[in-house]
Length: 260
Image (tube, rainbow, N blue to C red):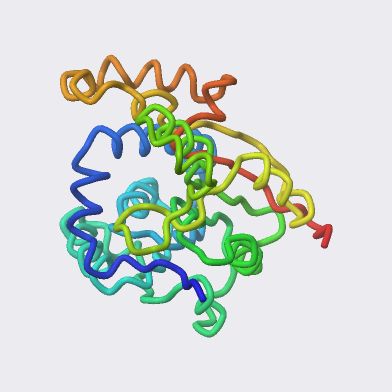
């Protein structure tokens, strides 16, 4: 039986591969663009950063004047997040909880105006059930910022690399033993089909890293972020680029009455 993936033992690799790399800068920029009108120069919100990892998003949200509960099941990730949060001087605005999505209810953490759920869904053995459970903590009329790893991008990367047999066999998902390879990459249309039955209304849909990950490796090494980022922003909400992006970001509002 497959279990959710937790990042104990991989925090340093995660830091190096994501946030010490232009990939992390692009990712944060697109997410912040999409969340701008909700969280910048607005009244304070109560926010849950579920699976908040190393705390980059929680820190940014706290810097905008909001109170953030960062829930992260990996002890190693949470320790690193705590140090980064303290260094940023926002420790009074961020509460750390060493729990998974499934453990939130037992901690009686209340409900939230905004839940950020970034790059977590693809690490869950049962992503739809996990998302439904998370939504029980979102206030009616509240917002969900959902970013997930794109199945289509994984297929494209394997095709470009000439790994045709893997694609033919449909073995796209990881078995959970290969470091940072997701166990449940998701198709955008599949996730879109969940929204209305879960009582969610799509507001903004963006692709995160529409082309950067597909650049030739030697070209990517010399590419300048200040030249790449404007184009990533330009294509983030344009098809077909959006649906091929490495990640999909869907900003949704919870309706006051749930369809389920």
